[in-house]
Amino acid sequence: MGTQNRSLINFVVCLLLLAVIASAGFGCAGLRDRQRPISTPLETSEPLPPTTPTPTYPPVQPTEVPTLTVPEEYRGLYEELDAALTHFEHNLNQEWSGQQGQTIFATELAFANGNVGEGLLLPQILDANRILLDRLQELGVKGVVLSIKYPLLQPDFPRSAEYLEFYKDIAAECRQRDMKILVETGAIFSGTDYSPVKVDWSKYTTESFLNGMRDQLLLIANEIKPDYLTLTEEPTTQEALTGLTIAPGLWTGFVNSILDEIDPSSGIQVGAGMGSWENRAYIDDILQMPRIDYIDLHIYPLGKDGVLLDRVLDIVQDAHDVGKSVTIGECWLYKATPEEIVSGPGIDGNVFNRDPFSFWYPLDARFFDIIINIADATNMEFVSFFWTRYLFAYVDYSAETGSLSIAEMNRRINQAANANVKEGILSPLGQHYQQQLSSRTTHN
Image 1 (cartoon, rainbow, N blue to C red):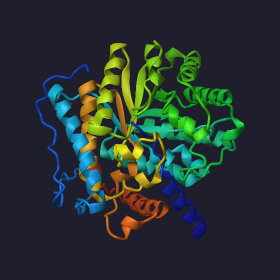
Image 2: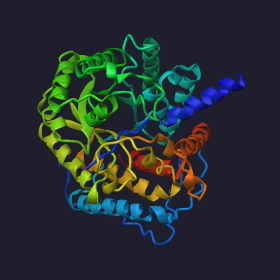
Image 3: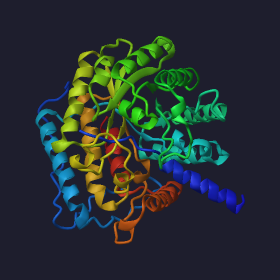
Image 4: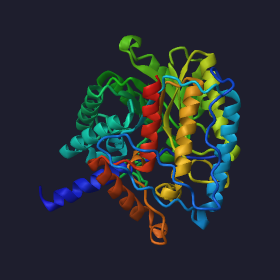
């Protein structure tokens, strides 16, 4: 393979690991007398203690524990996030018995994220996905999320038939590994740093956008046949990306129009949802739809004192009250204070640029534990963590890395994660997640 082709493939794989995060903004059955405590709050006035568990993931070698001193410029944010997690942990500890459930734990399949566009169609990318699926299977996850962005599968979109075949091949690879598949869609992140795909949204009306999304979702149901198909996600993000105004009632009609066309005997679980920070009006009507199987949530910002996590518990209870299950299609600890995001949902690369630093590991691990505990406490069906790359690598903070631009930081973390995926090396967070999943396998 020529040098130019190798460079192109490396660039595409980096883009794949940059799979775009959901925007972040604003802002129960089985819950009783918890017996095993969640970890206590971490002190930040001294270097943070190493808490990396002993890896049990062959062929991974023990990962060197990163330096966990919190830089002064992030100390206030760290302490605020720490306090929010602690506040929510206390609330959950009051109510949960500690009993494990049967949740399917998953991750985003970063190398198949639709925002990458034509890079997905390089023949070597299918092999890259096979390697990543093997690594995720070895880690212990039982499912993946495929983000198939609109309008990639529309008949008039360039190479749409090839995109469809790519995702059918990916689905087949997942099934060979006995992994459950949740598909979510939504507008491609055209016009942002997170996708090279060009779409002129000004040519769309609200009606044509929703009709096109409907057609693509039906095509996914008929051709790819995922285990879970989420019809709506983050409505305000769709508005922000497209410039269209789509009222809650229009989303309700959109969901109903798709349900009318999906064969109930297909075996596909059909859901709809929103970000935990969004207006409840987006799902209140959907909760009453008898043909909706599950409510899907995205969790990023915590809110003051973890109020948005408390809100998740409320939504789950409401869903269970009407006989619906709940999934978390995306979640990650959003490294911003409530004051930084009061303007509402947004795609803030400067916030995402904080994620790669290794000093966040203790908070990231606690966030993972909390999400897992929420899933157990509320009998969630499927839960996926979004930023797959941090399961394989972090970047240590220094004067040099602390001043990297968004593009430079992404290159740095992606190169490290790509190399570790290839070699089968987990980050401390990946080892922590693996230990949690291994423990569940042992006890269930």
